Image 1 (cartoon, one colour):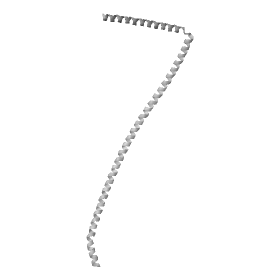
Image 2 (cartoon, rainbow, N blue to C red):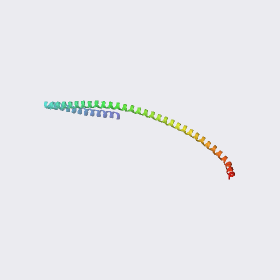
Image 3 (cartoon, one colour):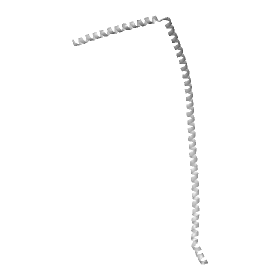
Length: 158
């Protein structure tokens, strides 16, 4: 019985919704008919004005479209030129980096050769100085060994 009441209430609500929908659609149809009547009442002069306005608007839009197309083409061309220039600059940068690397390697090689040469010259100079030192030490030893003889000769001569 309780369930039967809900069904009855549900049917009642559905009926009310249907009536509201029917009334709303009837109002909408009435509004459309009124709008149609208003449109029919427009004078030929109003229609001509609207057509002229729309033609001007179409012309303006066509001009804008053409100008935008030209600008788009110009910007596309400029972009292409900039891309080519960027690529050329990247290649130039790579070439300069390669040259800089080669120059650096050559300079490192040159510095190593100079260092090696200086080390050889230093080594030869050290050997020469050591040989001279040895000669001077030998000479000094000889002279020291002669000192007692020379002192004895001086005493005898005095």
